[in-house]
Amino acid sequence: MPPPPPPPTPKRDVVWIDGLRGIASVLVVTAHICRSLFPFLVSPAMSDTLPPTLFQLPFLRCLVMGRASVAVFAIVTGYVNSLGPLKKSRAGNADAALAGIAKSAFRRFGRFMIPAIVATVISWLACQFGAYRVALAADSAWIRDTSPRPSTSFAGAFYDLYKNLWTTWIDGGNDYDKIQWTLVWLLVGSMMTYLSLFALIYVKPRWRMLILAGAFCYKWKAHDALVGFNIFCGIILADISIDPDIAKIASAHPYIQAIFSASFIIMGLFCCSYPEEHPEWTRWSRNMLQFGHWIFPPGAEYSRFYPGMGADLLATGVMFNPTAKKILSHRFLCWMGKLSWPVYLLHGTLIRTVLTWVLFGASVRPPQGTDQDGNQLPPGWLPLARPWVIIFAIPLFYVFLYRVAGLWAQHVDPWCTRITQEFEDLVFRDDAKVEKPLLLS
Image (cartoon, rainbow, N blue to C red; front, side, top):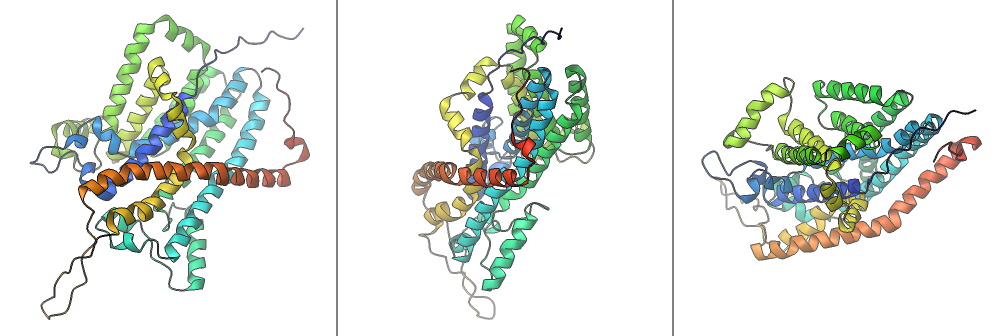
């Protein structure tokens, strides 16, 4: 007589993760716009003697900081990629989980790399046809530094494209879209997730969580604040979210759960507020700097560790907070989450072209006069447009960006998926193409 099946795990709502990803993606765009137009916001105050502006204050500055968003992407990567295999493992279908891990790992390369290649080719074409000409003369250090110059020859243009397509996945270098520097690390994080699941899929849930916690601590001590410990945080949260015992304890103590989750959310947002530059200028950031000496390993980059730790605390608090999950499950935020990948790939190119044309294109480069020998100096940078133009242009840019991202999701993403699927059908064995029935649903 076969053994009785294990008790079913409680059905948990995971739609909120799309909402969290959607907010993270729009905050990345906001952070890059602020770096372009208002670079002083990366500091906690205007100077060590002047008071802060509104968006330099704790919590509010999370709206203009982008590093926590990268940590959120890593958490989401660990969470989403591990949730399905962990559910199958807990249901007694470890073999099916391993088959799913193998296929997901293979597909990840195509679904991750092909859209990035398309985005790079678009930026390369824009560069060669002079679309970044205004950006290279704009009075914005971030826009100028991230805008490539056209190649010097026809053959050189194709060589530059070939070189950047390779270096994107070697060291994160991509002259045509420097924002893609994170992609190689997120891809590594995905493979780290699959490898960890492969090694731990047969391990008992309690021991698996303990081993994952050890991996989290190892990545913490190894200074892997960009992706490493955030990936393992996502896997641990996925395992916790489907654990019936933890769900039973949380539902039996709603008040403790509410206090615990709200405290984690507040602490997480405060940690995400840590400034990238000049933390010594204000008391609150100076205290965080001193506290970091106690909790972070020697030589740690606090402007990476604090947002990473804050994102972990925030995601943990949200997962145990029904109200926060309900808010993040709103269909508008979920819609933003569905478009987060094309938004991330396209926003840099559109900032350096469309938004830059609107904010700097109508300006005239001011003369700089002559040097001591009477030679004419090159003109200055193109000045920023008037404030009323900025007020109207930036909201319209977001509308335009998400419209283009929607078109990408309708036409480019299915094409990339189809190419990946065709390559999978070409190289996979026949017995691997057929999904085996699961023992338990």
